[in-house]
Length: 235
Image 1: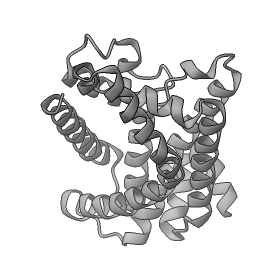
Image 2: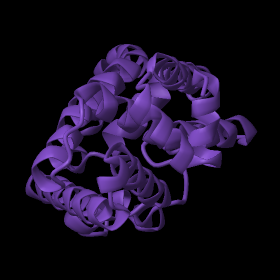
Image 3: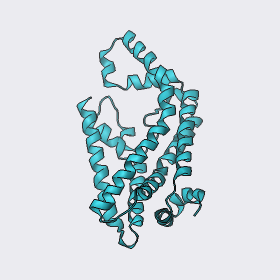
Image 4: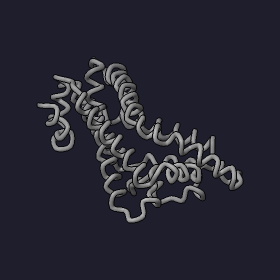
């Protein structure tokens, strides 16, 4: 399969695509698509919402803001606005770093938990394509922002109603529940299934989807609980 065919095949025929990636692991075009979507989203946020509006939203969502006076809030917002363009355009770089790390994690899962020897490049290619799910999420967020008459009301930290936290009030909800709910997302489950399928396909005849799903789901649940616990601790 060609690289463009693999990108579309991740959604249209994931089993065949991941099997092909196991034979010839390539991911550069995949990274380019993810980076382009991330930078496009950042540019659209700065254009439609503005860096000050984004900074104001971020500051007001912090639990520490309630202890600050109006002058301190204004200063914090102005300081945050200076760094927002940098953080938005740097986001694709951190995405690729995360993929590099996850490739190593899934190589360990395959080797030590599933008993399947795979190369790092194979798991990296598999993870990179499975995470195209989040590129779809980004594109939908861009579409939502583009259609809004008042872009200042756009919640950039949680733009789509695909997770539990979208329907909770952050101020009145327990920090642990709110953080955990943000990970109970339709797209997270979709990515989880693709990662499990990809991991199974890397093992060839030895690969079992059920075993891969159990290992991946356990890792994901552990991650969700840790992140929610940290959020509750610093709330």
